[in-house]
Amino acid sequence: MSRVYNFSAGPAVLPEEVLKEAAAEMLDYQGTGMSVMEMSHRSKPYQKIIDEAEEDLRALMGIPENYKVLFLQGGASQQFAMVPMNLMRNRVADYIITGQFSKKAWKEAQLFGQANALASSADKNFTYIPDCSDLPISEQSDYVYICENNTIYGTKFHTLPNTKGKPLVADVSSCFLSEPVKVTDYGMIYGGAQKNVGPAGVVIAIIREDLIREDVLPGTPTMLKYKTHADAGSMYNTPPTYGIYICGKVFKWLLRNGGLEAMRDYNVKKAGILYDYLDSSRLFHNQVVKADRSLMNVTFVTGDPDLDARFVTEAAAAGFVNLKGHRSVGGMRASIYNAMPMEGVEKLTRFMEEFEKKI
Ligand SMILES: *Cc1c(COP(=O)(O)O)cnc(C)c1O
Image (cartoon, rainbow, N blue to C red):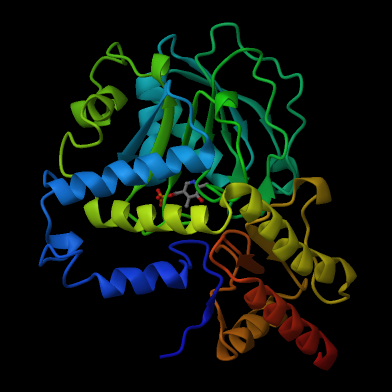
């Protein structure tokens, strides 16, 4: 068996320890004589799995009592509709556009009401985060929406917008659990698991209780109401059982390894290795404004698309896979989520240095 260094943006690398545990439990989960995949979601062992997953996530993030944790499906993209359907009671919301995912969310919200684009970094191809300290937040606004880490462009909000009292809704898909967060700064935090938390198929939403209400937009389907899932402990219907089980194992792995403070320190050091090299390289360049750089997705280019392609091919042959940038921006992207070991980034950096020397 040989494992590669997988720099995929998602589905992405998972901790090897977690995969080994899951493999060991595949045929017989803790004496039940069956795989978690084969288990009723209404069974006692499964209830314990989901309860522990929630408990561990609450411990990791310090989630207060008045926030619900929901395990949902439909991908992060389904939240682009669920957020306005559930929260846009005045039919007004403010969006900050920092990339494709916030743009998609903003477009989707326009199906339901007046979605204002308050700020955008489209003018410079999303290479920075706009100043959000004093935005013209609408009086009637139900919430302010951001995509906190921009997976495609490699930017991150290191300072949250001043929402002037309105609830902040954040898509944290690609920075979930990468560093400590102050949950009370948000009305709602959500993310797809497949970037930094677990397998595809699970979406985790953390929502302040007063935002979970029965009086959602008329016509909102039962399955798309947060209240449906909150009232049923994420068991209104069959949840993505196996995915939640793996997420739970990742939470325990994070707790064992010092929690989110330790993870942030590790991630800062890890990303620093790559950014320091990029800043000194004469071949590779990162185009993001330094203060807005992501710790999770590091984008870079040579300036020559043919050379980029050659680098991606040679890197893959050397065991550094999925370094091709998103199809809409080109170049390269190294996604270095929690489970990417320091060693993977060190070796990639050395490989880039060698490549630079021979070009
Ligand atoms: C990947 C991603 C999405 C889309 O997730 P799906 O689960 O494929 O719907 C949305 N937002 C962000 C920030 C992402 O990285």
